[in-house]
Image (tube, rainbow, N blue to C red; front, top):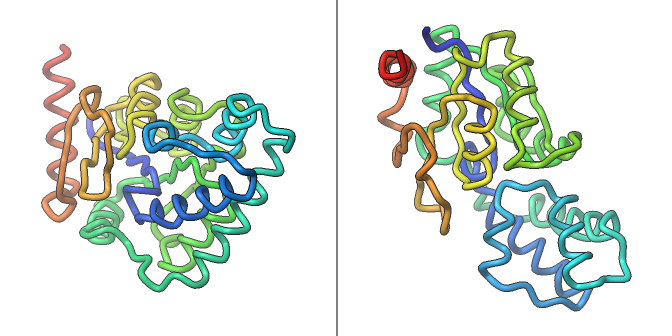
Length: 227
């Protein structure tokens, strides 16, 4: 067993759009007159916008539909994305992507973000050249921690799940990867807040020390441990 494909989450792994999402969500909360606690907001990490909004509609008995909440939130996010100059790739991730690509590893994006937001990030930072497929959780029936997105991402890679690795930064994302039966690297960065990495196969704090050789060695070692 050796490394053939890496399935990347986007928010919190490739780029830190969380501050923009947070601002957009809280502007939306204000627009519909609800107060959302820090704990509740953080529990949403890794879930799709539509599922978050469905939860809010049920929890707060809102008259607005979940789809309306999604439109309000995305309107705010689109404005912030266009006007916030601080948005950048996370430290070391471009080097990691290029290293994996250079070594012939298939790269697939598996993000809970909507496809328009994925495309905005990939076009802004010229990432399409490295990835063979991009999957949006917003287009799927189930949301992380359900494994659907990673099962489909592994299939899109063209490789067996035993030869795939997921890189995730959230409790829900890690749970989804493990439920899909895929080796998971938990990226615990300065941007990660109150997430549980205990189910990850390997926890890293710095992408600059990560590359094809290191990930492949961990995957092979895991297989030997399981045999």
